[in-house]
Image 1 (cartoon, rainbow, N blue to C red):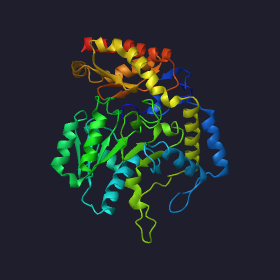
Image 2: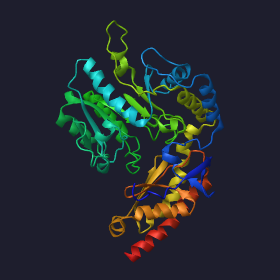
Image 3: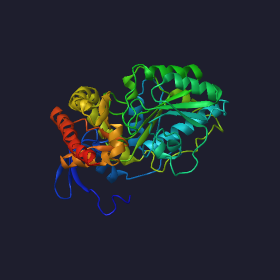
Image 4: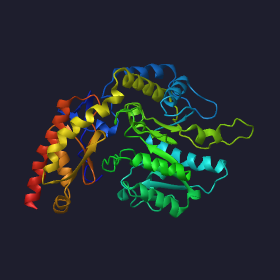
Length: 412
């Protein structure tokens, strides 16, 4: 906060894949804002849907038996996207809400089935699951848990690329105590780590073998980022829960949706007198204007096949970043599964110039491209509406930006 106090970079307007600052300078949005503007900015169809809904029913709670037509329609359309019939959908205000909801629903579902000891949650190194309570507790990024005191107990982290380590941890804790495993199909904010071939299928099978719920965190990769509707459906698995947000409304309204497999949701839907109540929910869950935005976004994803673009653009992005792999300042380029990538600087560069990542980001900005700093490097995840010329422009801006880093290294 101190570093940017008094010197904000103020975005004034946006259209398509371009944003402008208050001085009128244009930039290619190389990150789709915070991974969410998959359809590009300024989509009139979404704005019109929100406006129409606000004039009809601006807001109302969906607790108890209260509902509204946009939320009901959205839940039905989303449930139809789940890879198995009978799924339920639970709404919130964003991805962090959905992670907390998944953790609590996992534990509560087991408790209602006579297994209250199943409370342990397992996640992966580099994994990011938001900044709410459970999301912070299961974070695989140590910096995100620093200075906040003790976190929720009964959690542990395993190496992100080792399926055997997951099974070993389940056995160490005791399968009868493990509730869920949280897995980003492609790790996003932790540095962009695509899964090793077979990893998703193997960890899913391990969870099934031990009765552990497989929670796919698709907040970043859903809605076209990896070329499918939900992200995890790129792999031939049926998760027990899927967390989504961000691209669901194109970021225009705050909304998260948690998909819950029918078998997991069943204990809450007996309909019997005195049946259990899930005492959990967000004030704005099922907000009619947010639901209207999501419905309009879904129409656009389907109309233009935008939900498939992540797979179409993954190779052009890999090609545009390929020259960086051989650059002496670059340690690793991670991409190839969906339209997102992480480029990490070499370890010796970061040792000699601790602010090298910031220098690189600012150099790319001066070249007219916005990228996101992520720990030891930068990430790119442009809107799915860009063309291959835009993708090449991102690669060139990053290559040019390395010249500033090179100068800093030489002076160190």
